[in-house]
Length: 223
Image (tube, rainbow, N blue to C red; front, side):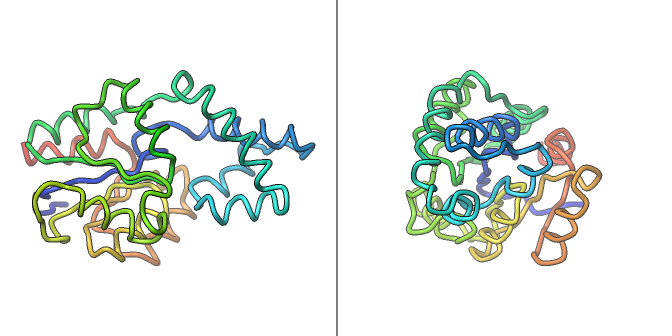
């Protein structure tokens, strides 16, 4: 499969470049324990991973959502830099895109201050010139607002069809489709067939690959 070389690439963060599933599972269980709620199994948590914060906390914690958020953020702030790690092949993806000369940014529903600290800890500061986090735009993903804000912050105007948003959830595909950008889905059909099937059946996806290593191989054509 081939696509015209993009003029700018934006990435989702958790689950796309960073292996955060186990860490966020632990953070929610820390909050749930503090509230006296039974812990999530990994399978239970997988159903909620990547959902927008506004709806997720209401669904999971109801009237206790503000207290849950406080405990969750306490755990995340204390442990996020030491416990998170890049996904296999993620740094190689960033390296080849930079080598080609395409500017990159991050569009995430995670707090910008947390992502900034994680980017610095990975030594990835030089890869990104734009970072849009939770609450920076009028609405978070799946709204197109964060991506449109990222484009507004970026140097130089580009046609939206020359912009890629790379992500792993329905939030990302919905955001990208609504903004009129190219949509790149990095998600294993073998591991999550129902999730992949739902996204491919409901959104326009310009490229679907199972992991960062395969995405890196795909990108080599532009080099």
